[in-house]
Image (cartoon, rainbow, N blue to C red):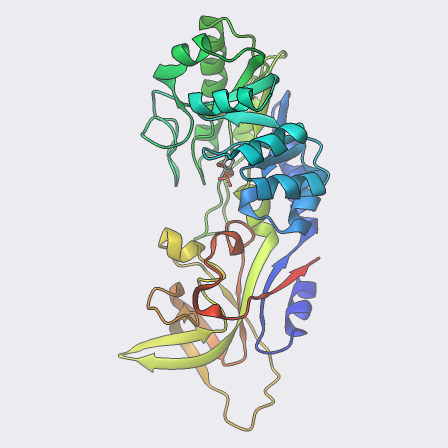
Length: 374
Ligand SMILES: *Cc1c(COP(=O)(O)O)cnc(C)c1O
């Protein structure tokens, strides 16, 4: 990763950047493809990272893209995605019309949306997103078997199918259930169960389905360098007349992104030492949103062109805090450093998914980071 470090050191001070490595994106896609069972395809879920370079790279390396807004849809079209699936509970008529025009497969989330789609003149294939009766999996965001705005309650399915607008064919089910699952065996069991449920349900209602979309949720562990073990997925049996679709976001992009930012000040108050950064949770909100400490490494910058002394701490625990005027602007608490100086960079790995994209950029109106892509 020395080319990463060189690029970051070359930035003008105060240094603050996101760095995305498209080689790693491609490698992740290759690894995932090799780990999947036969009759399985995967679409990159654009919401994890909508940087146009990332989207373009993964449009080429995956079977297609999963989008959840008109903005993501147009990114996907521009990126030349071979296949687009459009989901989300709040699609506007404009977005639905654009999805139809782009030839996207739409995951319909309610009876009302079905009628709107028909009124817009859509004819042809659709998938239904279902909030099933039972819980699916443990993970960060449970989305099925509990009350949520996502999908159609399983018990309402008979009514929906009875009143299906003319010309719409249900060709599959969308069963996205969880985010950041770290248990590969549990995920394989979920896929098997999702296929079984879909076939049983299709049979019960006389539907001939071709697709089971099991959504995203392949996890990475931010506290360690571990990720979900993909090995168990290979043994999932996908019948020949069926396509199993996965929509990973986090797993494909987390490890391809770094957030790097300069230490502007070092101070100790009431016995705690703070590394105050040119950046913070308005650039990288994930640790604050999820309430964990994101590990970092120190990238030393030896240059010190100033007439005043350089601050330095050694062998101590620091809290990495940002430039916002709120005590919640914390990326990491109690992280041990052997040496840290003002002007050094903190390098946060695994920042490629749900980093910049989920952050509240305009709070306090600081300059955005630089975006570097290789
Ligand atoms: C967010 C989302 C994904 C991606 O989830 P990850 O946890 O990033 O893999 C896939 N499908 C749908 C419908 C989503 O909402």
